[in-house]
Image (cartoon, rainbow, N blue to C red; front, side, top):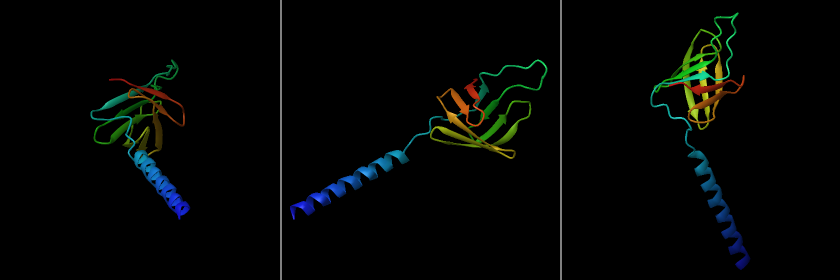
Length: 120
């Protein structure tokens, strides 16, 4: 009888620990709060004198969920964005971009490895 009671206590402790871990994981906070327009520009862009239209990357995040992305040129892709923890997903008509939040002032585009820094 004592062995069964100990086994039941161990099972309950494991279930409580697992529930607590799942709860804390679900409560993760977004690492970037957009309460006003935020403009990010590429930090390591080198201007090509032969291509005047190459302006580097730029990203504007608005507090209403809208975005404007300039992927290395002078044409804006208008779309929306979602922040989930340390990830930003920007969806436009042309393409979906995934970015990683490095800090409150720096983000990184995942596919091309472009670093963007807060401008304002």
